[in-house]
Image 1 (cartoon, one colour):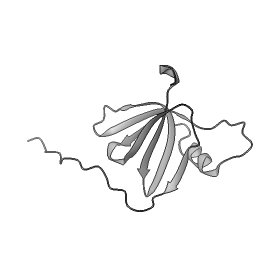
Image 2 (tube, rainbow, N blue to C red):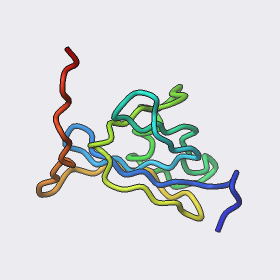
Image 3 (spheres, rainbow, N blue to C red):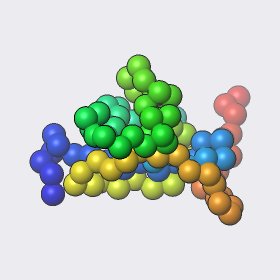
Length: 108
């Protein structure tokens, strides 16, 4: 397995009827309740001859983003992986149910 500072995480989440698969160096629980933070997104090597349009779309969408906050209920899966893969967006096929959360009681 990779050294502590070389860890790469594959984060899969749902966003507006699309499934995003991103690779990041840091993933942790946010101080904002109900959100997960991902930092230092990793994309494929720019010197490759074959360019994936899906990955290019993600690079454009997340260009200049230092940190992204993903709602916990949108997370499908997080894996620690040996190497980064190809970031991609795919359409939701079938039904993806959100994780059931207890309703928040307002403070009086």
